[in-house]
Amino acid sequence: MELKGRIISKGVAEGEALTTSQPISFYGGVDPDTGVIIEKGHELEGKKVTDKILVFPNGKGSTVGSYTLYRMKKNDTAPAGIINEECETVVAVGAIISEIPCIDTIDISKIETGDLVRLQDDVVRIEK
Amino acid sequence: MILMHLIKEEERMLNGEDGYTAKKSMEILVALGDIYGAEKLINIDSVQVAGVSYHNLGDAGLEFLDELARDGKVKVLTTLNPAGMDLENWKKLGISKEFAEKQNLVIQAFRKMGIIISCTCTPYLIGRLPTYGRHVAWSESSAVTFANSVIGAKTNREGGPSALAAAFVGKTPSYGLHLEENRVPDVHVDVRVNPKKISDWGALGWCIGKKVGNKIPYMTGVKEADLDELKSFCASVVTYGSKPLFFMEGITPGSEKHQLPKEKVTIEDVDIKEAYESINDDVDTIDFVCIGCPHCSIKEVAEIAKLSKNKTVSSNTEFWVATSRLMKQLADKRGYTETIENFGGKFACDTCMAVAPLKGRFRSVATTSAKGCYYSRHNGMKTKLGSLEECIEAAVRGKWS
Image (cartoon, rainbow over all chains, first blue to last red; front, side):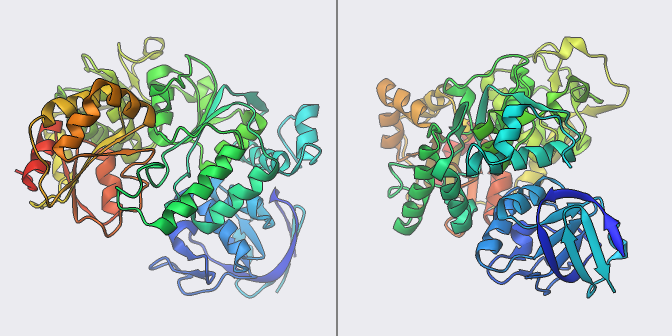
């Protein structure tokens, strides 16, 4: 299956999808040293985002979250790519400065955890 | 595909012909412009950059700034928010050497970019005053609210990286509060209270922030407000609400252009009482008193000096005056510094209670600032909001009465 979206941060990325229907706050919500989601009660609490195609509706929380994504990239704990329904400032800026490919305006309900996903330009290719 | 219209010079930067930092900055501005439907980039007069404290940036933030500083030079006058410490007197304020070293590296990177190391949340008090209707790109929510509302300049609420990007390009995408159609008030706030002490303005901000949320308030009923009162109100209303713009009939510019919105809320004494009850914790012993969130004006420093004369801070309590270095230099000349230091108070220049690494150092704080209480709770402190007199009394007795 192929879905077309909008490029937020250019590049090619491939990996296994990790999908949630809940927004993610990178500042305080993800441990930049381990890549594990630590927000209490989050659907993905305890899951590692490293090298995954992280699929979530939108970011939330402090603008410091952009720096958290950057720190994850430097620590090799960052996701390989990001797919959003509607990207907001924190994730957009974080993805750009960290050079993590990011696409939004995608119907994320079509992507399940474990799917093999490839991001290239504005296209998302999904293999079930 | 880029939706926004770019001129040749902007495309050149985006293609990397003007170097790494210009390219990264254009990528950020174009992405934000496209997300929010901007048609083009517009020129800006100045930039205020937040995200200066090493406490918030960490090593990753520092590394990012170093990378930008390699070939990045700001194109417009750019000033800095408070850092995590007083850049000169950090030892006196109990900051560790390790923290100070890292914080100095952060400052060095900003200096290399050509940014003025102002380290204040009140750039408008140190000569960085935008004028009515002009576009700027500021971060620091209290200053953004002041610029939009009290001055009538136009800015969105930028984050650290997007403010830097705007500084390196000298432009910002034209969306949000840069457009007149998004600066129309949508809720009438009938203020039926008469704020007297400085903390009442913070409490009023709390009430309005909570009641109107993401709407732009048009306030009636406020008879007068001076600079310090407006400064305090700006900080509080945006901390507890979210839109960095309000109109105050007869006081802030542009209010005469607008009709009264149909939706109406009322602020009464009972609301102000609720604000104090919500902000104040159940605590008697006060081990920290901090005045200056936002940074003290010279008038506020003078008031502190007047009220603290011939008194002594309790041995169990620390008393800080947070202000810009420029105000401190004025205070030195006018003798206020000596009076406040004789009292046992310490000046915390370049930094503040919201961004200094205070977690675990104090158990309770008394302050005149509603915003200061919000951030102190994040730092694990119990909070008391009150007048300057009450705060000084708390510092002397080590207790809230």
